[in-house]
Length: 466
Image (cartoon, rainbow, N blue to C red; front, side, top):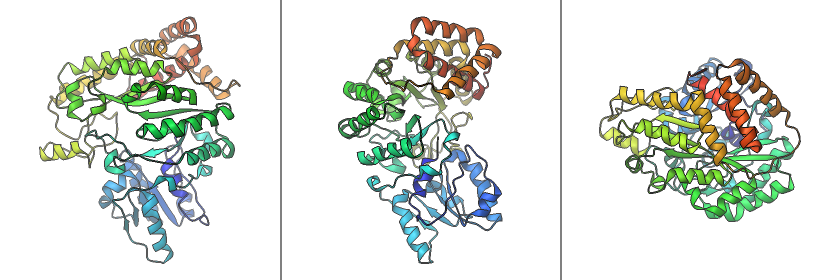
């Protein structure tokens, strides 16, 4: 997905400035890019620390001034003495201060605030800077902040509990730009940490306007979001999402263990049938991907099989399972620091087997149990069994354009060759394809798409051909 933060910040800069975007997730930073610039603006997250250091080194070799912001620097700016200027917290507030001082020839080094921005004043991102061919998704932002307070989550520390939203007109304008200006067609990810944080505004104003826009433009996009599990409590909202073109949501399930949910203050997941809720959301027309965590203090040796059973029964095909970590500025970090259990800083990676504190469970037992979960849920046969469960649960609602999608057609041909012919798990692939054609023929595109995802997950976790 594109670097939405950077292209939003870009729109805050003077229109007379020449700008060049280098997204290091899809393109290498060239020395000529740095030579071209007067200022190098960097935004990054924890997991990107290594590449941040490389950019700093190369920029300083050429005596370029560096301006930095975003989550990594907002929380760790003191670790980067080489950087000339920090635009911390929300740039809608701190960037104008920097630009004013820069214009006066007296820029300060650090600009920060404890206030939260009115994002109804946030400018339209500079989508024109993107090379759209490099992306499978476009993204937009509707809101910031989350009303909940999970103890391992840093979102509220960065963005607060109050949900702040863009105006409906802003969102419609962004859809217009995606459609008309950069000619995007396909998936659009809404980059909110909890899209339904303000249910009333979403349900009564934004979604009806988006639905009308989608109908008028013959459904050029599909949308995916992050929500909380209490989405399952609102039938009208789920129906409206599906009718508008929303087809998937990521939900932090975390664990089926009530004690652990209480431990991490995941109040929205407590005292409910999580499995039934997931299936209800799927039947309403939204595929569910989920986040799962092991390593809570209350976890016992039974948690690993319980996680496997839940994931398999739920039909959550994309299950992100991680070891618990405590990011800075979270309640969990403060607790573990007081207990003298912190060992290092969190890496921000969900797949590197790291923890930054001493767990209550024996670490080797915890690591073995984690590996057991990953090995089981992403082996070919159980993965395809889970995919069948999704296809049985899922009731597609949204409409899609009927013209031939050539990139999708090419992806299908490639999947047949790589997974259905060359891969050792090809027999399971063809069983799934045949089963889908007989039982859920309208979901064959979803089935093929998820076989590609499964192949990718196996490569990521080193399970290829298992």
